[in-house]
Length: 215
Image (tube, rainbow, N blue to C red; front, side):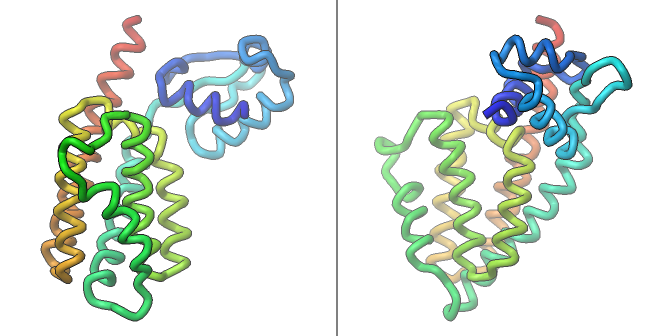
């Protein structure tokens, strides 16, 4: 899908903030007509990644860190609220979802995955499952929308093995606190986990943009 490819190009810094290009250039590179390229670009424009230039093609917008921080703030509220409910409300909890993520994250060190893409997907599933397991469909819907919008930078958190190891440790602590119905520690651990990830992603994004511009 053209949209997904172009979004990956932005995420992988093949299209660097400030780059200018035309629909024809992208059509030739991707081997498709201009119609799907234009449709994809308008969708990316709505999401704040590119802008159309009057009679002069398109431009990749700078990363809007303020917007991403606002999304992370919303994510924090949704996830900590969900964790509080998981620890205090027995009636609507989806135990099967919690068991599924426990089977992935509560494993011996020797059984941990080192596959960056897999861990990134599992991390997203972990946080989405925490919210979904709390049993509020509207909260789950909003959280999935936030997840989709921050995915482009969030996956950068798993480019180093140390961050993968830390994610396993932090997820395990959060899950154990939930299993023990310890609401305050669970929320504190989750809040610290999200804040650390947010900080790492910001640093990596700035570094990657610098490298891409210097190339």
